[in-house]
Length: 305
Image (cartoon, rainbow, N blue to C red):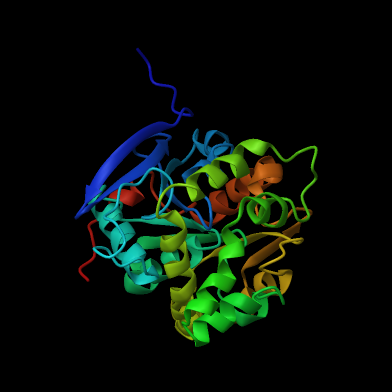
C-alpha cells in the first residue's frame, strides 16, 4: 500500500526522560523543515501548513515539553526553562539524524530554535520566522505583567500573569486579535484551551513566563549569530499581532540586509487564516535558497559540537 507523502504521521521519540510527540510528513530524503510551535499551542498549529509543503519537503513538528502530547517529567523533577526546551529539541534532532534543516520559528519556538542555530550553525540551512521575535523592537506595550515578573519573582507578580493563560485570553486576544472571524476555525484555540486546563499546566506555563527573561537577554547573541553566519531568513508576520509588532520583523534587516519580510493581514496565529499564503512564500523562498542543496542535504555528516 503506497503511503500518501502529504499525510502526517504521528509518532513519539524518546529523548532522555522526555517522550517527544511529533508530526511528520513528506519524502524521507527531502530537505527538512523543523517546525517549532509557540505559546500556548502545540504542533497542531501546523496542521494546515504541513500538507501544503509535504510534496517537496520533509516536515517535522515536535511538541515542546510542557505542551501538547509530549510526555515530560512533572514540574519539580524537570526544569521548565527555555534552555531545557532547547536541550530536548537538540536531542530530538540528533535522535532523528537531522543533520541539516530549515527552521520555522514561531513565538516560543523562536528562542528555542535560535538557541539550536547558535549552538550548531552549520545545521541550519534557512530560517522562517512567523511572528518569532529576536529584537526588543518587536515587543508591543502589552507585556507589562510579564516584564514585572521578570524583574521581581514575587507570588503576587506570578499571579498577575495568570490571566494570560485564561480561556478568554487565548480565544479572544491571542487568536482573535486582527484575525478575520469568518476564517478563524475554533479548532485551534479550543484545543489550546483544553491543554491549558490540564492539571499542572498553568504552573509550568508560569515557570516559562518567568524564564522568558533569558530569551530577551540572549537577543544580542542571536543578532551576533545572524551577522556572523548570515542564514537566509524569511519573515512572514501577522501585522495585527498584539504581542509581537511588525517592527520585530523589520528589525531582522538590520543584521540580515538580504532577509525577506512580508507583513500579512493576520494576527499572531497567522497560519490559522493564511496557511496558503505562507506556504507559497516558503516554497518560493526555499526553492531559491536551497537550490544548491542536494536532496540528501539533511543527511550530511554530523558536525562535531
